[in-house]
Image (cartoon, rainbow over all chains, first blue to last red):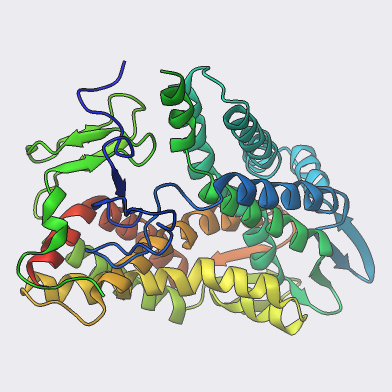
Length: 211
Length: 212
């Protein structure tokens, strides 16, 4: 199943996360201070405290996910009357306006992606903690997708920024961003950091421990 | 401090590379242009060989710099409702967030749509142009590491989708006229994506080693 070589860790090597340069794992318990000889970044055998950091960021994201969806992300005020929009009602409005492709895009980016990201990271963390041997290649792929797709959830935040820039005719129509937008942006950023602090090599460490 | 003598310590494992996602160790095989090596165990990309990587990346980064200037100077979009006209720039949304004291969102949008793309372009030029002429710029390693970070947080492509959604939402309410900046912005996204795919990060690190 594995290639002709062992893992770098078994060969006594650790690789730099910034430039891929390999270095010898220093003797002693503190290899936290090691510096890459090529790019001068800090190197670690594995991302430091990967599991606990990822859990912390993920739990914070779960908590903020609630206000992100319940509170209005923006309010459209026209002729003195305000109408608050949440993430979900924004999608509904697009469907009612007959803009189905755009509605699907926003639904996917703002609702499907954040939920799947939270669930995928939870699943990955649990699978590593319970030393799962199940389909490591697919789990690594799931991680890769989670890492790449996360930034696309920002569509809604950028849309609000464009709307408030365009629509500011005091008496006729203005748009005010709501508190939900801050929570939503925080969820996206926290899950991006969570994905970054998760180390997919832990998946494979568990496989090698068993082998 | 790392040793910067002629026997550079990183030369030690020069022919080896570890997969970043599963830690499997590989011997680096020379590739032909356009080829890419993937990890056989987990499928992650290991390294690639790109034709004239430095030249192409520099040219595309210079193009991006010009387009970036256009995208920020010229009007982005004009909004017309009941005869009243409102012109906006790329940065107007950021300004509006700050005026409402929502500085978290203001900083976020500023970084993702203006600051990080700018730093990424300038950082690429700062590292690659001197290296192309066989000189190592000051703090080159730090600068290039930062460039790699800006990659994730520069979100102009996502911003463009935000523009499309906003336009669709306003379409039946008002008249929207796209400005010069929006075309420059689209071209900028394409140029930067091309610069990304032309960039060979391993080649940059290796060239830096030649000029310690």
